[in-house]
Amino acid sequence: MARALQGKPYATTGRLVPASCGPARLELHRLRPTRLLRVLPLLAVLLLGAGVGPVFASAGEVSRWPVVESPPLPAAIARGEHPDRFVAHTQSALRPDGTHPTFWRIRSTRNFSAAERPLLALYAPYNNHVTVFAPPSYVGITRTIRDAGLDPRWSRHALVFPLPASLRSGDSVYVRLEPGRRFPVRVALETEAQFGAGEVRYLHAMVAMLAMLAVMWIVVGAFGFVLRERAFVLLFGALGFELIYLLFLTGEAYSLPVLRHGAVFGVYALWVSRALGSACLLGFARDFLDLDRYAPRLGRMLGWCAIGFVVLVAGSLLPWPPPRIWVPFAGNALLFGSSLLALAAGLLAARQGSHAAGFFFAAWTPMLALDILREGQLLGLEVPYFGDEYALPAATAFAALTFSIGVAYRVLGVRIERDQARRDAECDALTGVLNRSALATRLERACEKAWREGSALSVLFVDLDHFKRVNDTFGHAIGDACLKAVVRCIARELRQNDSVGRHGGEEFVVLLSGADLPHAAGVAERIRTLVEVRCREVDTVPVRLTLSAGVAEFSREMATPAQLVAHADEALYQAKREGRNRVCVYRPPRVELPAEVA
Image 1: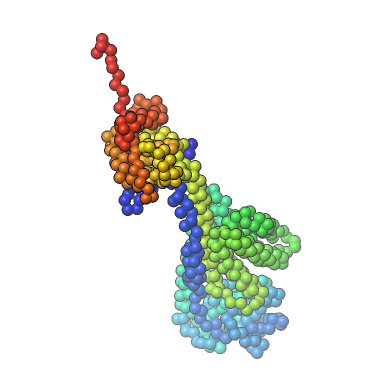
Image 2: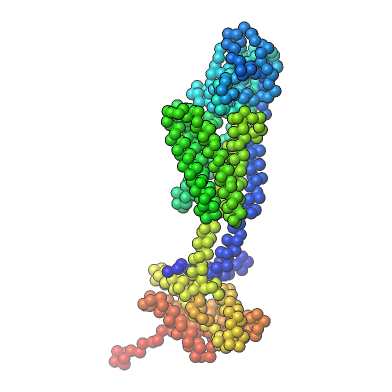
């Protein structure tokens, strides 16, 4: 049986509107998230703006040893040989070479005191292998963010090398970067206090963004577990792997109890987490954009790309061919190809009216732009990278928030459509009140509650007087308007737990929960009076509408709920016999006892 729906109160009067299909259509119309989509770009700018990197101290004079020549030996550096072989470098970012080691000289332009504690900071080192040669011994010290012995006072957004307190203007520090596809490293000669201030800013921004991503991951996982929505499950997987990827990329994973063991896998931890995150994200995009409906061919292609990432993960575990050679190129090619493919699918879905496409573009575009800029840096191009190590976490956190809101909107839309279908099945199409089937279900539940709790329950059976004459005289359009006008009058007298349904034709049944016979009779009389006064004219037509009503109260002696309606119907016919436009109450017939028993 279809479930009956309660009415909704007026905002000002507290009275009820009968269950109707209209409000659900209005909610579905308002579901279009255009206002929110206008706010999301501003939110993205604020989030990325909050992640702008700290102000770096001067790196001093930076110069570079020619790449085509072998770098000097540490002993030669200590003797001060080859000072003129270095070429001036105008930027503070040291760019590794793809095939040769790079050698850099950072010359101090100021005198440091013992209290200032000078140090060399290499920011956002990621997977770079850095060797620093500092005076006075110029003994090489090699570090990566995966090392277990780094200074626990600092985060891993920079590799820190303490310098001698006697560092003076003109003294040089040398840095060697190993070859490979690695990101540029920003370098700075600064005091420990300057570095500490930047460290605080970094922690504030990074913790906020990673915490936001972690919270969204937990929330999405909880919704996926409860709702069993595939989109939530896929997004949960994507956010989880992206969070692990960012922790490994920034190096913070290597200071955590569980993830620190990923150091033994080196760069493989980055590859696996990013590839699996991308696979889940593509599956989510296919489901989120409903590509099986809007672009089935592109949807299948995205599915194959997701499988390709899984194959890439499996292939990176093979010893031959060397994964370090082919996995980065294959992975980046697959990443860009699938990202552009997803962007094209989103555009096609948007052209066909998909509201999810707006959320998709808002979340996907910043991440794609950052991937393009990062690839440009890996290729050695001089491309700006807004926010540096802050940009990718900020874009990922923003994407997590945007996708989560988008999925929530989609789930809400599905539920509204489901509730609309339920209303369509339970409501009378003309008047908006419960139909006969839903009314029977509501009556059965109300009787069960009254029997179980011993509470009162009354029923009104309402019938319009001479309604056939109204249809024959003024037409069925006016007759339909009369039915709607009567429903409005009935609704004004109902409470939150009361219900009204159309029994058939011009007959209505009203269920009054918790109302005894005298109270129900009073409600029926008020409805009768209201109809007589307000329905003299309907749509400017003088119909002079009236109604008759029968009232009956539930008792435990009744065999079925239908018997309660039958009693109210019997009282209604009594009102008809007595001249109409009146209310009659059902009274059980008195049983006359035999004289000898009396």
